[in-house]
Amino acid sequence: MKNQLVAAAAGLAMTMTAGSAMAETITLRIGSGHPPGVVYAGLMLSYFEPELKRRVEERTEHKINFVEGYSGSIVKVTEVLEGVQDGILDIGGFCFCFEPSNLPLHAFQVMLPFGTMDPELSLKIAQEVYAEVPYLSNVFEEKFNQILLSRIADGGYNLGTSFPWDDLSDLKDKKIAGAGLNLNWLEYAGVTPVQSSLATAYTEMKTHVYEGWIMFPSAWVNLKLYELGPYYTLIGFGSITWHGLTINKDTYDSLPPEVQEILREVAHDYELQTGIVNKREYDRLVDELRGLITVREIEPEVRKAWAQSLADWPQKMADELNAQGLPATKVLNLTLDRAEANGYQWPVRYVVK
Image (cartoon, rainbow, N blue to C red; front, side):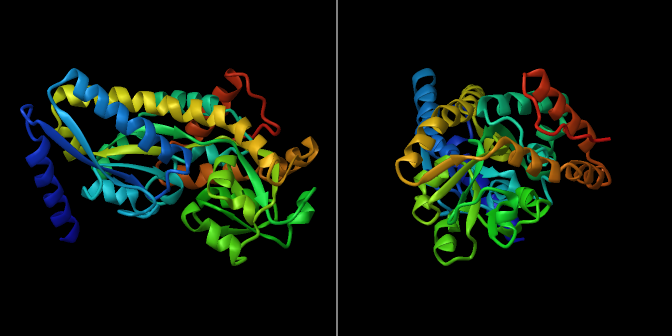
């Protein structure tokens, strides 16, 4: 009943502001559980919002206003899917890692660790997989009353720690944080995993809840995690496309057709920007970290050994998801194949049957 009332109120609000082609002002509630210091959330604020406003107001008679809710001020990182579904947010950005029950297959690149570290290539691979598996896009509308506007690439994942390490054996008695499925990268390698989120990362590192994070350099710099983790090791877990930007379907349907068209256009450009900006920023941020803390690249044989320790995990995930009626084997093999077709060589070529 609560959700129905929220949705009804949200629908009424949108009817008043954007319910017809004659509407002069469209107000959209937009946000994320993550702060703007995380690249995709920052791009929502600095690129998606102003571009949508500019293009709509230049090409139509309508105006766009935003009510912003970043850093969990409207919904937490674990609540964005439901928040958009219920109309608490009109547009939300979030990590699929926080929806292991609702969107278990959408983290498919995480199930194949040590993939490309190039965010643009990661996004391209994901786009090609989505194109061949309509379920990945359609499920948002069919089950969660929202439309997937953009897939979002991350910067490449490495390992930041409060201590130096050279080999997997150095991590055996350490607690390392991750989010969702990437905890398996730790567990299968014999490292103690701790579930966390960037919203609490600084405090939890400071209070020794854990001693490191599987993390991309933008967060290590922008959230000042380097203050607590003065060792950043370039191991290359991969750049993962496992965030999304969605819009409430009732909100979308209430928009004038010309605004819908521009919204889709801006969302496509924003999607590309997540790859472009993360790729551009990666080297700059790693260089910035070099001036702040100890940054080193792990030996290739250590990376390969870690990948080998995870060799059985993709098949286990495929079996579990296939049993739920999801096309996991198809999606994982498409991802492996598309990566290779785009020139990437896996350190360990996972086999999924």
